[in-house]
Image: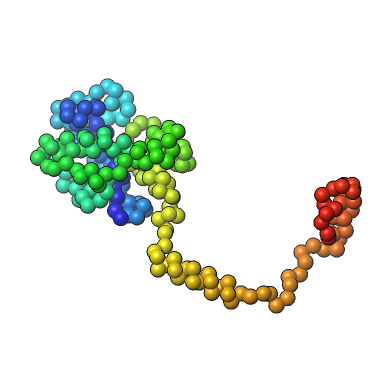
Length: 232
């Protein structure tokens, strides 16, 4: 199964007035990163970055001035995103902004059935929380020390690691098919049946000197010592 773990940064919190200014996405195939990523900064088309948002992601109006507008990145984005499940943390926020950008271009919204919200997953698995991305990185032992500010691609990369761990870790992605499992069980049965008893017992691992030292130690523990119930 192909999935895109993604994140957005925006000029503010109102998806009707504010704009998407950064998108980062990481492709997974059967819960493994493929190495195929997507990252772009986007011109806000006159919408200024709110000071509160700037404090979170550090993306300035000046930095965005020469970046492409959303209509210019949609084709590249669709090449990766189309046909995949879309995974995001607090997905309603990110999907709401993407759908608002789609609506401005006369495009249909993203099918909710394609969306996986890792915040909802985390709340079910860890109902006592906290379940922020930073908290989940700490819970799963993922190094996020380089995350001094939010960034769409960095956050998508961290979330991809969290999402993999939430689904059983990398070993879970190595799951056997039904036929593989049957073959594995049959192989174990064959080995067990063919092994049989040893033709002769293994040689003792303790020397006579070690046995004598143990007896001497045991004698010094007194008659009621637990060791006295065991034979040499």
